[in-house]
Length: 460
Image (cartoon, rainbow, N blue to C red; front, side, top):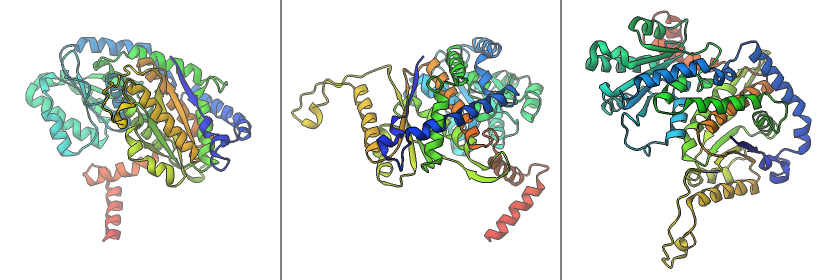
């Protein structure tokens, strides 16, 4: 398993001192990076944050594998009901290891598809139900709190859909993933005897992809979760190293922190040059935004810190976004994600049409063209003083993907320490949830109904 980080296009020698980092800036701040590593390690040892432990949970891996074998052959669709971290990790795994839709091929009991209900758009929900057969569907409902309005509403619809078709047998088609000791989903799962897995209390949703949240749908879809966790475990070991050449998560965190805070790059563009990593870019977008966008630092001081993450797909978005990136505000840093050994190369036929726009391509490969497109974009951005860096996976398989996701979670945690913020809370999300509860008539939320009424009066 091999993943590398290349920061050379972040350097002042490539993009100029106004926009790039000097060797002195990097060297002078290495002790700060090592202090961030030590700080996060102490928090982990205190049991506050548990994502580093997830890949080593062999008991859970065995239980999930046994569950997947039990259900094997009885379904052609895995319907995941969740939102945010309860859905994006699943999509990242499915997209990377089985292919982006719609190129996965015909689904069957041997090749089940994953349908993710992560929005309450009624047209989307209705079309999703129409596309599935309740007799051939396993439903995986995921909510750590057990009360997320979007997830609970969608699950009530899907549960009734199963009941209408299967009656008392519906409960046997439902798997619940939630907290062990709290929440209404846990109560319902116990009451109706759903197959149930638990989310550790010290693992937040956006860091939960290697818990049951991601592993259960992955195993049901036929992904080798042992290899996935093996790669993540190897990366975890590297991420505790104080050698920045070994610890690429810490090296990346240091470079991104400096380019963000010293060179004022308030936007990071995650730029995968692989359709198979496109889902991971959206997973990263939540991880980065929700973890690093904070109003206050750990001392309570108001800071309103945050770097806006953007997802772009190479080469698609060379033709939709790069004009802005080249000539618009120089407030961005670009993180290219590339694959050294794609599964296929695809030879371009030698058509000999006597047309230069076609003939020079003949006999070459699509993989060579994709690589040339990325390197050309890196060079063009650097030539315009736009800092960028590159993460390279040797290939996209379970071990590399597990390692890559774990690396980005560690990088995010290290950034939180460098910024002196809590990267694991999400207070900014909560007020909208509370207003939603009030608007939908949930008991006990009258205070927020009054606050919302005040807001409406101001609008009027």
